[in-house]
Image (cartoon, rainbow, N blue to C red):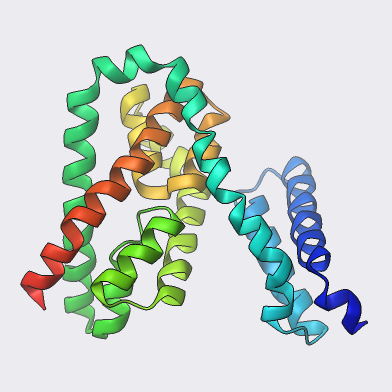
Length: 230
């Protein structure tokens, strides 16, 4: 049994199988709670706990999945290329919105953390929550956060956005492709972008661009803001 668990194929197989189950459940149950990412996450935790499997053993294969996030993120350039005319036309709006969103997002985290008495380490680790995981980890290390806390917040942020983002946009009657794409990309990064790509390629293109810009502006401003307050 240990030979199977220690094999990287085990971690890959568990990840793919649990995500497949999540996709099957989403087709059968239309509830927002049956998001395939959430289902996969819960099932993996249960499997590791029930069979007393060390996370490091599982992650030997999980690391390969994580590595594939990089080319998967780059693949978002395809819809961006197809909608390049739209992105050029709306470039000032997209740039301005993502810059303000990055700065305001950091200030909101710090403000809410101050009001609730959140510890400094946790507070700083939450700052890059609106950026995609590889960028968030780098920013967290630069400003003195803890990578594991940052990753958890990024996943939670993306998951909530992926589950409820489109419903909120519909509830508030937001129909502009630019506004919808920016909202999902800025708040829910990869998970949100994958979700909105299912609705519209134009919105997905804007969302994909917002991921990169949010990462850039957060990396640029977070050290300055944290240095000012701490």
